[in-house]
Amino acid sequence: MATQPDSAVKTLDDIMHDALVRLASDVHFESGEVIFRIRFRIDGLLHVAATPPMHLRDAIVSRLKVMARMDIAEKRVPQDGRIQYPYMGQTIDLRVSSLPTLHGEKIVVRILKPNNERPGLAALGYEPDDCEKLIQAIGRPHRLREDLIALRLPRIIKSYGSEYLDHRGPLRNTSARRQSGQCE
Image 1 (cartoon, rainbow, N blue to C red):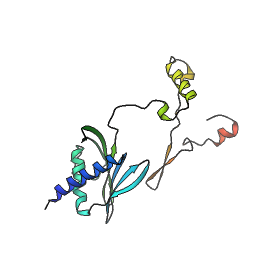
Image 2: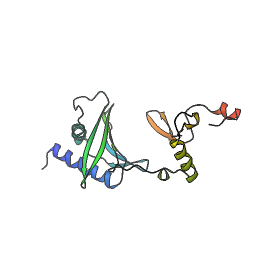
Image 3: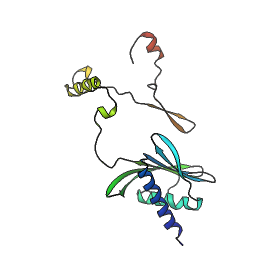
Image 4: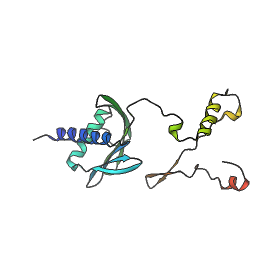
């Protein structure tokens, strides 16, 4: 019969392997009052991947924190770490964050892509004429005021501890600017 740490190591290895096979971007280890669940973020949505027994919770969390070179004794403050995880002949970079909660620690593991390739502008969804304008703006000398490149990113709204992406626009109130006819 396997001991608890051995079971935690095997469980964690199985979970990380499954996350990489399913192309998850995050793995959330969440402690509740009576349940310990693991969720994968796949295509922006969280899916329940496993609910290991509660007696493995502390061993799994400690294993993650040791691998990420975090202080396993500190459970009251947030911590960050990283893991170089071997997978199928590659080294996957994992970023690990721990947050104290009412019922234990929540661990989030961010899985970074195994290759160092950066996507081209076309892969980012720019139209061809917008790509050309952006390339021209980047190539100009930086002493002209028109060289400012503004990016419009999704905003994050915090509501009762949850984060929601809102793709409607910037965080500031733009209704007065819209009425005056100014562009965003």
